[in-house]
Amino acid sequence: MTLKKNIIALRQKKAQVQMGGGKKAIEKQAAMGKMTARARILYLLDVNSFHEYDLFVEHEERNFGMDTKELAGDGVITGTGTINGAPVCIYAQDFTVMGGSLGLKHARKITKIMDHALKMKVPCIGINDSGGARIQEGIGALAGYGEIFYRNTMASGVIPQISVILGPCAGGAVYSPALTDFVFVVENISKMFITGPNVIETVLGEKISQEDLGGARVHAEITGNAHFYAQTEIECMNQIKELVNLLPHSNEKKAAKITPKKPTFGKNLENIIPADPKQPYDVREIIFALTDESKFLEVQELWAPNIVIGFGRMEGETVGFVANQPMYLAGVLDCDASDKAARFIRFCDAFNIPIITLEDMPGYLPGVDQEHAGVIRHGAKMLYAYSEATVPKITVILRKAYGGGYIAMNSRHLGADFMFAWPSAEIAVMGPEGAANIIFRKEIMEAEDQDAMRQQKVEEYIEKFANPFVAASKGYIDAVIEPKETRELILHGLEVSKNKDDYRPKKKHGVPPF
Ligand code: HXC
Image 1 (cartoon, protein in one colour):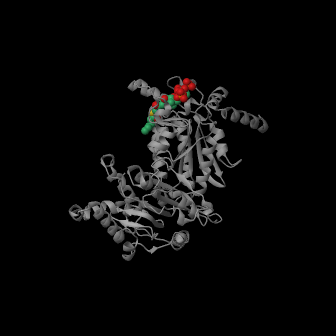
Image 2 (cartoon, rainbow, N blue to C red):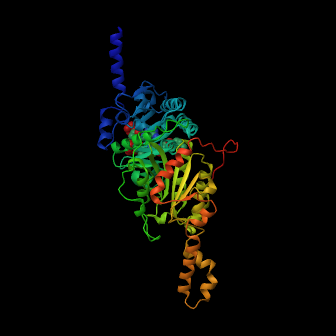
Image 3 (cartoon, rainbow, N blue to C red):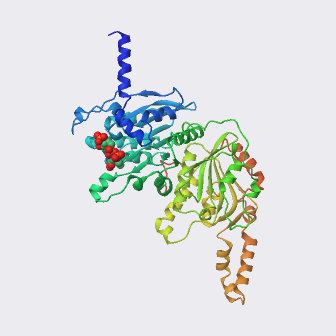
């Protein structure tokens, strides 16, 4: 054969394999509103930037009729490309090929591209659409997943790892995402569970829909497994692009700086917090007033909304925000809020992203439910994460900073580099009502008019402690500032922290309260 004929044969062979499980299977997926695995990659990456490898890899299983089965690309597409010019490694499982199930060769394609990402120090994106371990392959499939989980762990904190759930994902297809940094889900399309409904029905005799077992909203709102929720695959892909733009390629780099822009949010910072300390407000408005173009990419928006986490830019550089949200449960810290914030803090710290903490909360949530759910262990994660972080850490106390929450929200005592407080800050062991009832109990009980005495004592307490000046007089607060000075002082804090070098004792690794 001439080279020309060989080229034509190559093109035909490629076109055939690139059809995945065939026209019918593709149509079935399309009817469910799903893009093909290849279309997903091509939409996500810059035009003409995708280069595929291992297209002709074949499975080697011979049992259960597998000897006669041809599986295009063994059910997964792998390669490299760019997103807005930034290099990434990527894989996408193809549900049209045996339900995207994972056999050993399928797994080895994935581990090869993961190894590449780790060596080249670029983010790795996995698009998961898979029934999990390929049942016919038995131990080979389990080995394959084990090799993926191992690499997820090795890459953790070195390169950003992003998982996209775009189908009914079971078993290993959800455990690998759980080990990565960010999980994206799409309404009606994403399903995540350890064991599929068919197996549950067989083993437990229970009938349950895929959606109820683990649909997109379940994971975005209830379990916290998902970090980003979208209505459509296109919206999801655009969210991924936005996130990748904000992140560094690896832990050895800083996120790319872009042209600085001023905030565009219309409200004056002085008018966001209500005069009555019991009234709620949306802390995101404060974030909008601080970030370039007032842009903020919120992470885990629907889960544990009493704390807000996410990325923005200040003077063109990526920063991470952790902010109590007075709109939900008065911004109290509970088990989920602590888990949410602690993991985000560790991500920012691993990837050289400064952390800005905005504080307004009444402390940790008391009560039997939280105690039994392990608020001690979960709450400790935040103490650990902030204490351990060596990136620049700046806190602004907006209003309430009570009790353990005051310490947990990146206080000076956990290593904050700059502590600012607005004049509205109230820094105390607990809220004035609770405090007065305890420390002035005797006076209140003995008073003729107990209510009047209680009110008087509450006011005395507010006068004495519910302000930022006691903490400022001890040097725990560096400056009591006007709201309008906040952005300038944070920017200055970031500027002078550029060469921050924080000592940590030598150790193999810590033992955080996982
Ligand atoms: C082999 C599989 C498969 C699997 C699906 N298929 N999952 N083949 N191994 N794990 C095949 C189906 O046989 C079918 O083939 C095709 O993929 C499409 O599947 P359907 O069932 O028709 O699709 P759907 O109704 O949408 O249901 C999808 C599903 C269901 C919910 C994923 O297939 C399912 O419950 N699969 C089993 C899920 C599961 O429990 N996996 C756990 C594996 S254990 P045909 O030829 O008919 O088109 C695991 C352990 C890892 O992963 C380690 C964890 C720590």
